[in-house]
Image 1 (cartoon, helix red, strand yellow):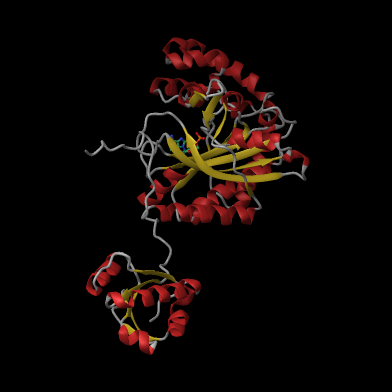
Image 2 (cartoon, protein in one colour):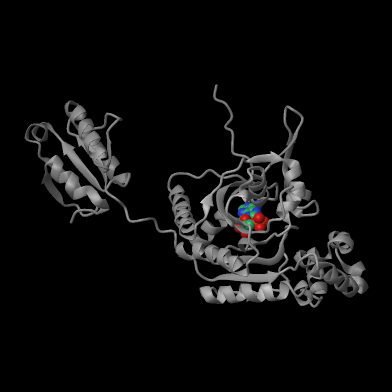
Length: 425
Ligand code: AMP
């Protein structure tokens, strides 16, 4: 009796051969770029104490209110699968006292995040982010540097038509001023706000800018922005961030309505939008969080970072037709004429692999003709035929599958001609 098949949970993906190559390319671009900028990799656990996200992401954020994968473990602790990477990296920075080393600390990470949201194109329950976090400096040039790194990442992947939105969301000095100005402005329209925004009105009216409800958007459209209320520290800081971006040649749009969904941002906030992937148009974002390290129980150390959604990055690359793989290195199939040369073919594969050339042999007991057919279908660039004559003479027929031409080579010639990642002419 056969069993019923089991499918993957809703909102998750299998990354299969054929698409995994694009993921690997993203990872190698990310690692090269971070190395270039002097960022070191950090890996934190996939689950953390729930308390970390309550404090780190903010109890009134959508993530904490609606989207966390939280459960009691067998020791009755409340555990949460990480919905984002910043709070865990901050925790690790504090717990491992990375602040006692020479500052700043430049870190990057990549890995799966978990959010219980309604799955749709570009929105998953398990998705992957690439992010960076830098600790120990308030310098606006650092803000410009991280944003530039982020844009360089997209650039190296061949993506274009991205919109970088930047804003300053102020600090604990400007925020209360803005909050009062905003409440005064919104008061006459309070009854027209959606129930969620009515709830936000008292404690967190800034988040009303984030509301997707068209009526709320209309109401806040001309409301005083935080950017118009910046203090004498935040205003020049924001100007210097923009100057830094100008120096990098990074184009941006100042969007005073950009406040981002997470509660911890101070000063710089930014988001990268792309038009090609439908409703989920944000492919990355970040900002400065000068109070977060203290919030998580560490010293008074400022920080800044961003996170890029890799699924959305790949969707954008597909939409823009820039997913082309790296040029193919030779991949050699060594066919045996009859079962008798199977060992010799196997031995030749060992020699080629030792020389760094990709090689495979038959493990399906196929006829010569079937081996050729398989090699052709599977994308091998060369087929070496091993028969009795080849075994005794040490000269092998090598067929270039892309051009149809044939050569007679010794093992040494084969290694010399197939090496170095170039196909022979
Ligand atoms: P956030 O941490 O919410 O600022 O998200 C940063 C980036 O992660 C977004 O710009 C998206 O590219 C990506 N992202 C966030 N949530 C999801 C999700 N549910 N599915 C896929 N990508 C996501």
